Structures are given as C-alpha cells and as structure tokens.
Image (cartoon, rainbow, N blue to C red; front, side):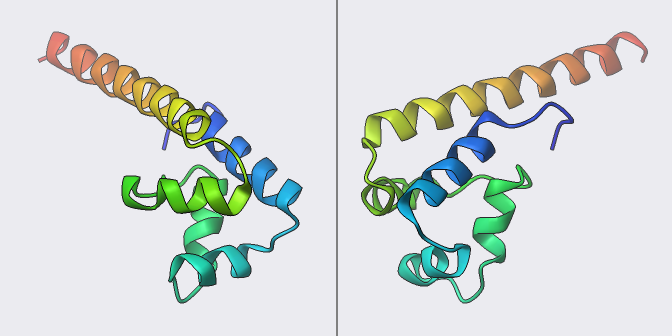
Amino acid sequence: MATQESKLAAFLKECRLKSGLSQKEVSTVLGYETAQFVSNWERGVSSPPISILWKLAGLYKISAQKLFDVVLEEELRLTAINLKTRFKQAKSS
C-alpha cells in the first residue's frame, strides 16, 4: 500500500475501539479464523471486502453510508496513486 496514511485504516480502528471490541471479537463475528484480517485493515495493508461492509457498519454501530463514503474515498486515493505511477512509467518507456 502507499506510504500516505490510510484514512480508512484509521477510521476502522477508531470505530472498533469506540465499539469496545477487540480485533479478535470483530474477526470472529465476521467469520474469520484470526484477527489478522482486521489488523491488516487497520494498518492499511488491505481493505475489507465490500461483501462485509454492512456487517461492519452494524457491528460498529455506524451508518453504512458513512462507511461506504470512507471506503470510496480510499479507493479513489489508491486509484489516483496507481494511475500516476503508471503514467510516469509510460513516460519513461
């Protein structure tokens, strides 16, 4: 992932902490065997799959729209970084 801090990662961690849940508790409710998935999301290593956003919103007691907006912002940021990198690479080819 890019070096710029992920707003999504920070948002997910903040929501989990406000909910009083551990990474293990979240992972268990979402059907993951380990907390590594949640840890990866909160460190910006990966993003949660779209298919679990509704569950995450319910678990964290936040609006699904707010979560979607933060995910969308992150995806747009990553796409822009990717396109800039590809553009620079194409220029030097």
